[in-house]
Image 1 (spheres, rainbow, N blue to C red):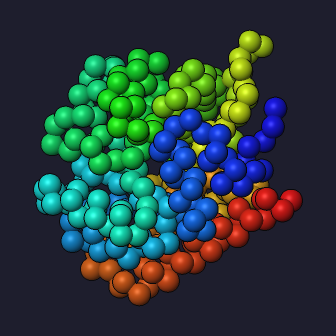
Image 2: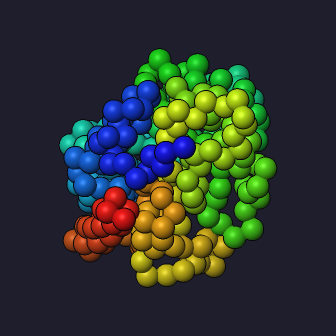
Length: 277
């Protein structure tokens, strides 16, 4: 089968069925950015300051909205305003992991109403295909996209081997809604059987654990460079957090912007090298 990651983001956008995937790929090409910043901070003030600072340099803002200690509805309103101002999509890293009916309610309802504002969300494959069915019942009418976790960047992660293969099989059966994976490598063809249709199979690979200055932390996170992630392993989006904003409290806007530009340039350079090889 062909290797979709060797085509440009623009060309790949033309073939994707899912609106969220097409929008993300078009934005990546327009902004010359494959950078996602994971804004994992606990104060609304810091959260919005970081998003505004990095917004011009990213294709995607990744949130963990439930860690904000002073969350209120104004956070979402301001986040959506910044999304339009800086032209980025929003990825709520919810990691759903329950039965279909429950995740549909978690996605659509409750305090956060994630489906109403997050272009992309994600889920564990542990519950089986019903989790995709439940989330799709809410997300597809809103033109949302789903990412499955098939690999993780933490030391000792159990998402390997047959688990990864089963996650890819689940995604393959729902390419209308599942647009890719949180993973460390390409997933096309993984777990495929003789009767599987792999025509135009192109999963977006979002890869966390990216750093230019360190190889790991005390919590078991392992870091790779943008070149390792994008050029060598064929991943599409690099996810960076503390490497850009540090502790995230009372940020130095100029320094955060400097680091965001640095990672944007490194990620885009790795992508251009991939296309030229």
